[in-house]
Length: 92
Image 1 (cartoon, helix red, strand yellow):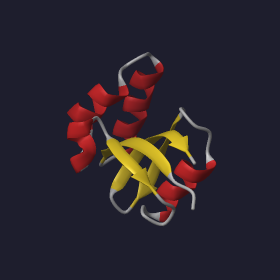
Image 2 (cartoon, rainbow, N blue to C red):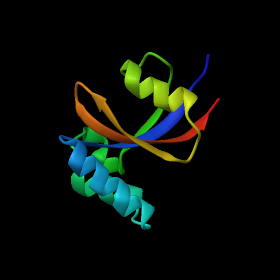
Image 3 (cartoon, rainbow, N blue to C red):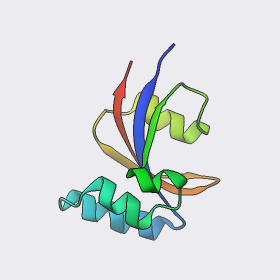
Image 4 (spheres, one colour):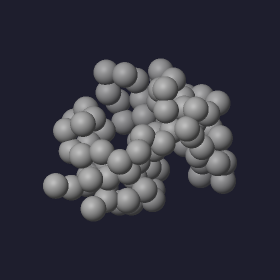
């Protein structure tokens, strides 16, 4: 079965997600921004969600992690939790 490792930053608004994505494009550190702004419990680990299988996360999240290019920040992706910036580290 496929597995992937990803990290994310979860915020309440699309505007905030867009601002953070711009900071990342300018060279900001993903983990630092996740620790400061993410509202997920993974924030203390720099947004690291560890390794997981398809179906573990909500569908919109899985679509990015298991189909989009690796090592690229995708989003904002809207889910019932808020807006995510997602980076897939690897897939098997």
